[in-house]
Image (cartoon, rainbow over all chains, first blue to last red; front, side, top):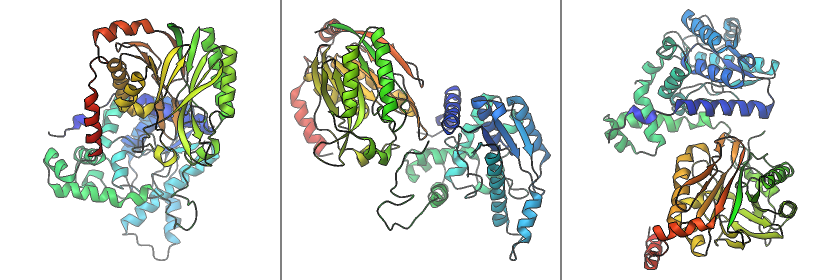
Length: 279
Length: 277
């Protein structure tokens, strides 16, 4: 039987309630003053910020815009401000270009053409700013990574996924679009092509080599224990495409499970200390 | 024996690893339930300690009877109620062997316990890592009729409830810690187990969020004909009461006589087939 996007439908009202309860509960447990969110103006961060504002009140949410000169985009900035106004949270903008330039200058072997190393440094620089603000405000950092990108490792280790909570990480990109629509995020944000904005002209679907609609169905199949042959047949695509996505998923597990200690003693951090997550 | 009585389903959010706080909550709710006429008050699976306790289970587990059982028995005596709750049990014969156990106490003290037979160890569940499974069904004769105990994932295995029913249980109590994505399964299974056994079934589920798991509540009393007689809220703490009247079993047991129609020879075949799976 053909696998279609219908499998990714959900009761978005219920999903919204569950996410908002999750956010509210964690804020109450940790007694944090609020949430700081890296607000790029893209669909993921706008949706996460909107959910956060609804969960704990806009006065406890700060959308931090962290542009830098190579990727400055007036449209993103406009979108971030539209969502902030609509959902009633405040924003602050810090141009991180000077910090990045100083960082680049201190590295003797710095290569301006190495987009990946430079791009990851940008993501980690943003993380540093987010945590600085969170500490100052006695708040937590709220991540806005989605399931599609996180599953295939399309993120920076210790960078954009470094956060205290991840409200939408269990939703594929196409599901985030549906949730965004349900929340009333403007259509121009929902339909805007996704970009991590690590270098000029970087477009997610171009880098991934496929549309999110296809990627999400492949990942859905893998999530549901489907074998590559079956999935290829049900999606009517080449098995090699599935294998490639599966390869990206499996090979990026080190980015999602970040503590790998040599097993030397009785109980080991990251291995067999199995403790409840406090608080 | 009371043929008819009020039952209270108390879906609570546990404070993890804080037995004192949770015992206080049990006591407050039992008193409130009593004021509403309840003779039986039921709390969720592992609600004495919280569900996601992991390695700290060794710290909080107790023998049964033990201090917490005695504390609850005292509440049962004071309120003249029967109380069922869930806790991690430390085996009396060992130092660190645990069970996921349901405890039944009454106005005269400890009545009995049930050790969960089916321990989920898949998806987000890791119960076999910590618990030894139980090997016995549990049906207790009380002033409130014959009560059979099961725990959460046991409900996926119809033979557990069937065994309790064949041992005379009129009311099956299923205490649970079920996270949100499984709601649809439990809503079907609670009705199915009640219908196929022509017995009352009380399902009491945890609420609250533990390590990202959202327990959905939705506790319910199902009549022997599968009708939902009372249903608690989803996701929030709630305590609801409803009436159990064992006289309601007779007409449905005669109308859909599943117990009369049992085929014992199939159980032999089931056993053989399960062994060869």
